Image (cartoon, rainbow, N blue to C red; front, side):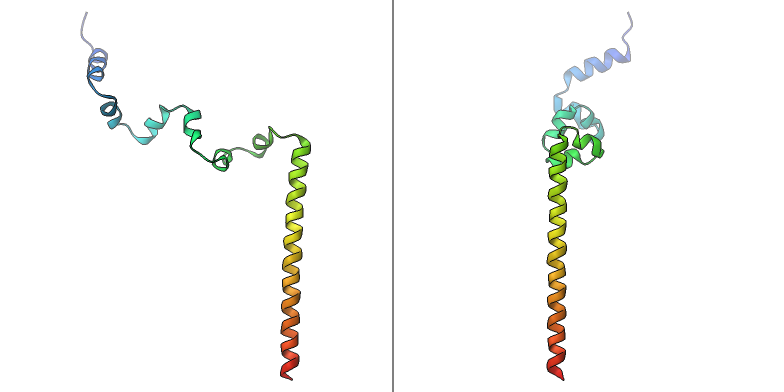
Length: 103
Protein backbone atom coordinates (compact mmCIF):
# COMPACT_ATOMS: atom_id res chain seq x y z
CA UNK A 1 0.00 0.00 0.00
CA UNK A 2 1.52 3.37 -1.01
CA UNK A 3 2.31 6.07 1.51
CA UNK A 4 0.05 9.02 0.60
CA UNK A 5 -0.02 12.71 1.47
CA UNK A 6 -2.93 11.95 3.78
CA UNK A 7 -0.71 9.49 5.65
CA UNK A 8 2.11 12.02 5.77
CA UNK A 9 -0.14 14.76 7.20
CA UNK A 10 -1.55 12.40 9.81
CA UNK A 11 1.95 11.32 10.89
CA UNK A 12 3.31 14.86 10.81
CA UNK A 13 0.43 16.28 12.85
CA UNK A 14 0.80 13.53 15.41
CA UNK A 15 4.32 14.80 16.16
CA UNK A 16 3.30 18.44 16.67
CA UNK A 17 2.15 19.96 19.94
CA UNK A 18 -1.31 21.54 20.03
CA UNK A 19 0.28 25.03 20.00
CA UNK A 20 2.32 24.15 16.92
CA UNK A 21 -0.80 22.83 15.17
CA UNK A 22 -2.67 26.08 15.81
CA UNK A 23 0.26 28.33 14.90
CA UNK A 24 -0.41 28.61 11.17
CA UNK A 25 -4.16 29.07 11.41
CA UNK A 26 -5.92 32.37 10.78
CA UNK A 27 -8.22 33.83 13.48
CA UNK A 28 -11.23 32.79 11.37
CA UNK A 29 -10.01 29.20 11.22
CA UNK A 30 -9.39 29.18 14.95
CA UNK A 31 -12.90 30.49 15.63
CA UNK A 32 -14.40 27.73 13.50
CA UNK A 33 -12.91 25.22 15.94
CA UNK A 34 -14.64 26.80 18.96
CA UNK A 35 -18.32 25.86 19.46
CA UNK A 36 -20.78 28.79 19.22
CA UNK A 37 -21.80 28.38 22.88
CA UNK A 38 -18.18 28.85 23.94
CA UNK A 39 -17.73 31.90 21.70
CA UNK A 40 -20.83 33.57 23.14
CA UNK A 41 -19.94 32.78 26.75
CA UNK A 42 -17.67 35.81 27.17
CA UNK A 43 -20.00 38.33 25.53
CA UNK A 44 -22.39 40.58 27.47
CA UNK A 45 -26.10 40.01 26.72
CA UNK A 46 -26.31 43.17 24.59
CA UNK A 47 -23.59 41.86 22.28
CA UNK A 48 -25.22 38.42 22.04
CA UNK A 49 -28.51 39.94 20.90
CA UNK A 50 -26.98 42.48 18.52
CA UNK A 51 -27.40 40.48 15.30
CA UNK A 52 -30.82 39.06 16.07
CA UNK A 53 -33.99 40.43 14.48
CA UNK A 54 -36.58 41.90 16.90
CA UNK A 55 -38.79 38.81 16.63
CA UNK A 56 -35.96 36.60 17.88
CA UNK A 57 -35.08 39.02 20.71
CA UNK A 58 -38.66 39.04 21.98
CA UNK A 59 -39.28 35.32 21.54
CA UNK A 60 -38.84 34.39 25.22
CA UNK A 61 -41.04 37.21 26.55
CA UNK A 62 -44.77 37.06 27.16
CA UNK A 63 -47.04 39.68 25.54
CA UNK A 64 -47.60 41.20 29.02
CA UNK A 65 -43.85 41.57 29.56
CA UNK A 66 -43.46 43.25 26.17
CA UNK A 67 -46.37 45.65 26.88
CA UNK A 68 -44.93 46.51 30.30
CA UNK A 69 -41.53 47.24 28.78
CA UNK A 70 -43.02 49.41 26.03
CA UNK A 71 -45.06 51.31 28.62
CA UNK A 72 -41.91 51.90 30.67
CA UNK A 73 -40.11 53.24 27.57
CA UNK A 74 -42.98 55.58 26.74
CA UNK A 75 -43.07 56.93 30.30
CA UNK A 76 -39.32 57.56 30.12
CA UNK A 77 -39.70 59.50 26.87
CA UNK A 78 -42.56 61.58 28.29
CA UNK A 79 -40.62 62.52 31.40
CA UNK A 80 -37.64 63.56 29.25
CA UNK A 81 -39.92 65.70 27.09
CA UNK A 82 -41.44 67.36 30.16
CA UNK A 83 -38.07 68.06 31.76
CA UNK A 84 -36.60 69.51 28.55
CA UNK A 85 -39.75 71.62 28.06
CA UNK A 86 -39.38 72.92 31.64
CA UNK A 87 -35.74 73.82 30.98
CA UNK A 88 -36.69 75.68 27.81
CA UNK A 89 -39.49 77.62 29.51
CA UNK A 90 -37.31 78.55 32.49
CA UNK A 91 -34.55 79.67 30.11
CA UNK A 92 -37.07 81.81 28.22
CA UNK A 93 -38.19 83.39 31.50
CA UNK A 94 -34.60 84.16 32.50
CA UNK A 95 -33.90 85.75 29.12
CA UNK A 96 -37.14 87.73 29.30
CA UNK A 97 -36.32 88.97 32.81
CA UNK A 98 -32.81 89.97 31.71
CA UNK A 99 -34.19 92.00 28.85
CA UNK A 100 -36.63 93.71 31.19
CA UNK A 101 -33.79 94.67 33.51
CA UNK A 102 -31.80 96.20 30.67
CA UNK A 103 -34.53 98.70 29.79
